[in-house]
Image (cartoon, rainbow over all chains, first blue to last red; front, side, top):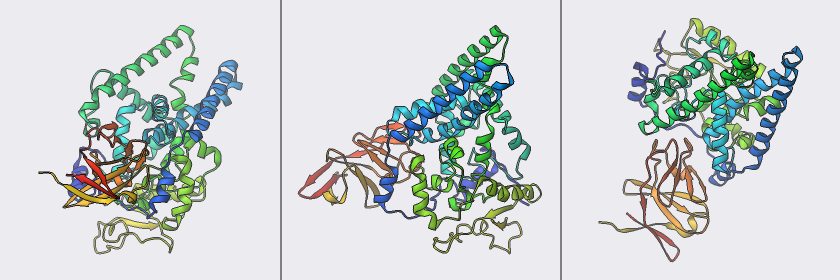
Length: 370
Length: 103
């Protein structure tokens, strides 16, 4: 059984560079340039509509929660507000970090700043972290955003349904950055020229939290924290539930997103919260395509992709058994079968991931996905 | 010593678009702006060496297809992270229906 070191400073990081897995040339489905240009085209209207709706709902839910506080009748409104704060902001952070939802750059930047604050992710650091995730998706030792490692840290994922670890780590990192320092791992992917920006944002956030905490103490109530801060915990479940499905249980150390990413059909409410990131293979293959065009992209290239999981429930029926199995057999993972219309996986590049290197007993075992 | 190289036909590039041009082991991106002017930069993004010809031209910017970093293709200036290093630019002229670059 192979042991893995997911740290960015460990032996797997060096191995990925030595074997050419780092910054490799990834597989892309062929799309005519004319069609790709049409899909990449930016416009403001869909994201303005969705953003007005999102912030409008947040104001309404928070207002009702405050009005009914501390009655139990306020609970449903806090739960709804929390999901928008602690989960919808995850997808807004993600998409606006790519700069694709709005045509107008400053709109992307504004929403990105707000969403980063809600998710307690430094907007400078995490832009670089996510760039690395796209360069080296699920490459062990290179990708800083691998959620389900091997063996999968199921307890960590479970408590993150309530935001516990991620938010605490975010606040701890905020205090570290506000003190003028960076974590050594952060320093591996953030250029030095960006360090002052990391520190400046962290200091602004500290002031905002200090004001909120002061207000809570003055009011002798956690109400201010129900609006700012705590929703990152009580509303995190949806983004963890959808986020785990992106790559969990699939191959590591491959350079074809069809092998390490998962597209899942979801209900309209989850797609609004998640901003269509359920089309995750498509997003990784073509990150320039805005969220609102991903369904079209999916329709255009699905002949070349493994079949999408038909629902969140169906996806978890696939994911949970393999995660449980990986607790004992770290090298097991799912391979996704391609339709006959697809261009085959490059066996020469993915021999171990495709499970056809039987002579090598250390080779990971591929389990066909349902 | 610099010289002018015949890179492509003027109509080979649509308005507000970019194409790739390879010459003697080097690769370039040649742009046609919305106001029908032509520009040339290094072909590879200064961040992670992805070819910009697969990217998106919007007004006078080129966006890298891998990480969405942005450059002003007229000056080569890096506009948005994760790109920090400017692109080299090259003079361009149109003679008849041909686009020439000076390298």
